[in-house]
Length: 232
Image (tube, rainbow, N blue to C red; front, side, top):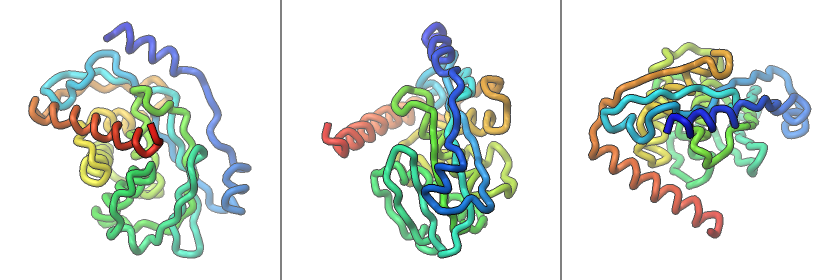
């Protein structure tokens, strides 16, 4: 496991550029008030499926990351555009009534709902998501998306790092429907404002093996649903 973790770490440490202002301007017409928030992916040096089984883990934040570029929208809408997917639009006032769409937007929408539940108003915004974290590679692309989205929705308003990680975990468990542990979100939050590949966290698990089995089954069902949506 350690050798495989080191291999992934070396493979992922290739510098790549984030989406630039020109891409944002082409999509939304203006870059006035633009801010960009970053959250990294991670690799495990030790530990896999142990963060929810009373085990220890040693994840390391990587320089591959997800970037959420955001600027205010004047029409009361929240727009989410991924550089690799279509561009949906939501009414900010209706976020609380939304149901999971089994689409990549479930991750940021679930986060937005949790941010609002803590009393932070979700502002109308045009958001561009760009990621260099490979999907399905075991480098926590979903956690990087959740954390970068949360930072964009907060817009500089302060939330303790651990509370931010818990918020993103609740979003994935309660809205997306994956009974995950907190490791992925925790290391992504820890590395969000840290030089790439310098953030390391070791954690013990507060949950037991029954939760672990539910997690694996949840991952299997989620993967099957995503594959079915792609016609596989």
